[in-house]
Image (cartoon, rainbow, N blue to C red):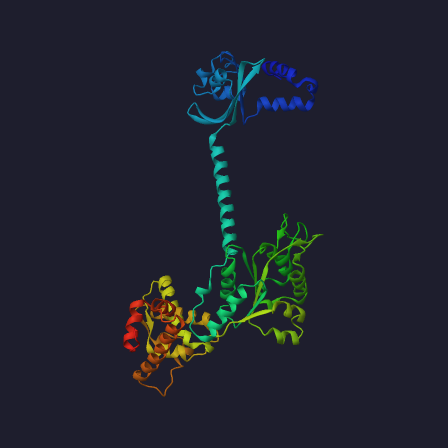
Length: 473
């Protein structure tokens, strides 16, 4: 070890006391003095340099030992060491210039018997670029965390309300009224209906009717691989199986704590999982895979299915006790073919959203096209109706009216041969339209603004139709 380093270590011997200079401490002190990533400067009371590491001397183009006795401000004009000597106050994490390079470092007073006898300074990094790189990386990680949290909030949030459920038919109105009554209770709910009828729309509306601020966790049973169903629903502890997250993972039941757990396509659940879910509903507690204890959960289950669960029970494909546990409150969403009076309302509503998305300007269906819509059975329900409108808009692209020729063949072929004239088409459409307007007025107790809103048409158009059909304004 070189002379000045040896002298410096002798000074430290008084500080180390009984620890002495063991081999470990010797090597630690060598690293401390020769660390290429940090620098060390010690000045006396006058601000003259008593010690400077070799790396710093080399950086300042000084010969070995050439810094000793020099004033620190001669070599580093922006140094904080003179301020430390004057005030006795340390300065940590300050940025200053050294030969045109920005440096970040810390300076501390050396105090003996209450008097400042010198100061010590260290550069934390030889280049501030590294600090900035770390800051950028930290900023990126913070942004990712914020995005993940925001995504989780969105994923666990319901956006639809009962106002989102359109329809003036008696069937849909009865379903909505039943759902509102059920929403006011804490009972678990089973929503039945064909695919595309809007079962999740009802589930979200029930949630938002009472506790919109609480979590709404959705799971589609049919999309989870069979071997992962339990880990997704119940969660798992670290190391519980090959490929498991080392930190473990909370299950969907835990995520839904205090809120609603929406389980779609519940008929797809394996019988073994149905048994475990039944226990969860009865005991309100879950046990993660690989865990030795249970966790208390408090959520409300809303299940949905497009299958006939009673038939599945008879076939042994669905547990009877589980069925009776979830079917205490049942809401049946009617298919579109049983509420065709809602079709014009849906057509107007979805045309607006499709126009916004595609940049089209369609305002209506032609009389023949609307007649085809009204005479089609819609096996895919509202979801199919939206898809047909999208296809028609993309096919026609320009204009304000969608002709029957733009509809898929299965709809275009529904126009009956026995009504060849457009006059007959128009008369039937007008009769249906007048019927819808009267139903809307009855539903809203004569409120014209709400009636227009319910029908999804501008108020000016609504008033014009009132005059056209001689309905008292």
